[in-house]
Every structure is written in structure tokens, then in C-alpha cells.
Image (cartoon, rainbow, N blue to C red):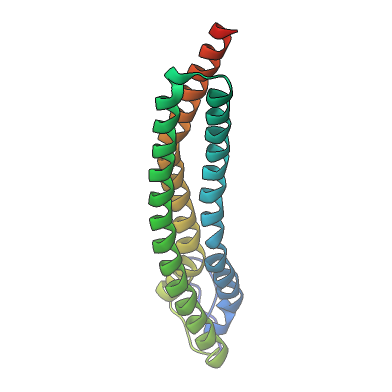
Length: 169
């Protein structure tokens, strides 16, 4: 078994040589569930602030601020529904990719001596390492953008309520 040096300057001739990359990739695909935790954690923090604002408005009888707090609640509900849809799609995609990566890992275990070309090496590295990291980055950016408007609304409402509270004190 001779080795070939690819255009990618990586010496590999056998499929089994990339099994450790595939193992890491399977773990990365499984870790995509963390993205859902990031989104729900951000929304939970905003929800806690909205509840605090509602309680401050109610306790201090700031009737003029009730509509602002209600608007924030409605925006948070829209955000939660939007992120729930995104999480559902992300879970489905992650599940399919985990199955595909496990099938690939199984092929590597069953036929480790299959010769690889540089294209196959690049494809496998891209699939097992690049794809899950790319999905994580894109999903994180989408979640961040979706949360930005709600975060700004909560912050503006908080400023209004606290300003109104200091006026009445």
C-alpha cells in the first residue's frame, strides 16, 4: 500500500485514515442541539425582563406603560414561535445529518482500505467538520438577528418604564 500525496498536500490512501475525522463530525452534528439551547436561553432572559417590567408597571400603577409592556410580550411571543420553527427545522436537518454521518462512519469501519482521491478527502473533511460548524455559525447568526429586535424593544420599554417610574417618585 503506497501513499499518494494530494493537491491538498495530505498523504492518505485509505478511507479508514479519516475515521477519527468522521467520529468528531458525528459529535459535531449531535452538538447542533446546543444551538436550540442558545436560542431558548436568550428568549428566557428577555421573558424574565418582560415579566419584571409588567410587575413594575402593575405595582406602581403606571397605566400609560401597560401598552408598551403588552407590545413587548407580543413581540416575545412572535420571537418564540419563530425560534420554535427554526429549532424544528434544525432538529430535522441535524437528525438526517447524524444518520448520514453514522452511515459514513460505518462504511469507514467496514471498508477501511478503500483508496481515496484528494477530492474525496476534501469532501469528507468538509462534510464532517465544515458542515456542522457552518450550520452552527449560520443558525447562531439567524438566532442573534431574530433576537436583536426583541432585545431592543425590551430595552426601550425598560427605559420608558424606569423613566416614568422616576417621574412619579
